[in-house]
Image (cartoon, rainbow, N blue to C red; front, side, top):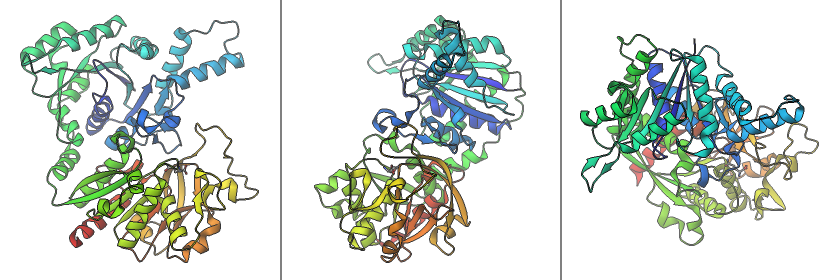
Length: 542
Ligand code: GLN
């Protein structure tokens, strides 16, 4: 029997609903249950794929090629359960499906309305593609009180009523702020938020109260009384030093016990949390430190590189070191000398990116890393820029560029359709829609025997997730390999370069895919583990 847990948020945004959902998922898993986590986002974009990272943070890509909310990354990192396209939906997608049905004549004769047609579509989504899961956790994006989340809240209200309390639970995350002028914690915002929810017909069963200090029992009682929630179900969610402590912290406050009690499930046996205490121990007691420069474009907004910074931390966990990140806006290299910014770092990472702005700075970072023998990790755009750097500065292809930046006589990076004639597989052209038209999701890759990556992965073939429109042009392979750059990972048909590396460099790897999407704290990605290991070696040199 699948039970549904609906997670809403109130008072303010950015309370960490995604982490809260992911942590509850991890706790239920630690009690031996199978879980799946889902996100419902109230905006009108069909998916976040076309949104700037400044607007929405990172776009998280699933194996099946869906472009989703970054919270799905938290879900995967905390539970290890691979997310699917069916785990993420937006108002935009719901409406476009309903409208497509209307156009097809599926509702012939009927007036199509938010209730029941839109709410039915939401309920269908929540219950679709479930097999043997014990729990499905559904997080509703936005904050209670937003106009745009109303259809979602109405849909979960209906579903809660249909499933009954034995199969559904409402959890609400709020803020209990400390007002320094008064020297007091305030419960009123929580009361108001629950009142808002009650006005929509939803009585929360569990309240998670974000708070920066211990919640006194008098305040806990007060919240319980005014919000009509049992006192033990008012759970303080205190700030912690590392996000990987959250499952343990929530367990200590009784979250999973309360959830189990609600569903009348046994609570005597403690969940197995060893995995989490090991990670926390590792994060909090590092044996050293390395500094990695992340040379990117969206460096002001850390959420734009969420999975990346997590994966780097995982690499640190694997090597028992703290990974300090030096976020550098690549545009700065157009005005200032690269050396002063990069000479002190132990590794350089150029992450994924789009557009010409800042590209020259990334090429300079790759050149610095290659020449100075500093560990370099190029991810997607970072690989493409490293290849252009080799083409221009070693192979002597002066005009080498990417067609992403405009027409070029030497499209070392380009749309595949521009350099493969009569190609049937690839349908992407510069005219096609932008939304959902990149090479998306998991693709296999064959590794060159004896290469560094074959050794790192300890396997001749791998699959990794992609999100890009342009490819390194295979027609330049021999020219590029003469520079010492080895094409060590290729698509199984041998057409698409997936990995490049310099064997005579301490650690220089460029990958066309996004390995950061699959890294987990309890299973650090081998490339990140190896990169950080190289940075540790480098740190001993400088
Ligand atoms: N802009 C590049 C492309 O579309 C790289 C994308 C990325 O780094 N994710 O191919």
